[in-house]
Image (tube, rainbow, N blue to C red):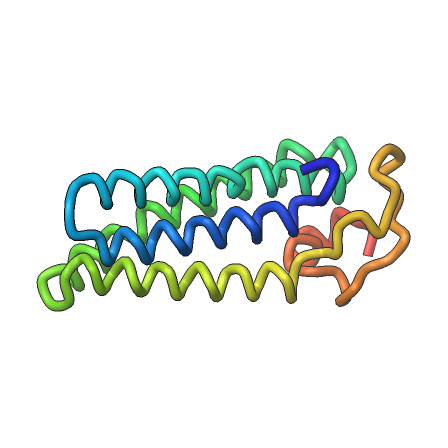
Length: 150
């Protein structure tokens, strides 16, 4: 994460999650499900440490705790709110269709990651000095704009 930046690492790992999700949806036996689940686990493993590394680089020390708490809260709410739609759609479409849909949602997340998140390492990590941004502030900085002095 420190060498390549959270944006590239999380995107690469989410590609592994897409492969795992698609193979899970197409699996025909237990071993296929097991290997697919391992790929999904590897793929989403960067989704915790990537944002934490990004927040360490992008925000001042006094805002670390707040940004980490927001990320964990939003992720937890996503887990809670995703259960009901899946439970409703499961009898109509089946679990394979739901996993294909999840793979599509991961593709959308990768696209949003590349278009909205700050371009990492356009600044010096050791001093946390911002040199510039590729596309404005990016989504994370827009959410915490008041804390960045804008």
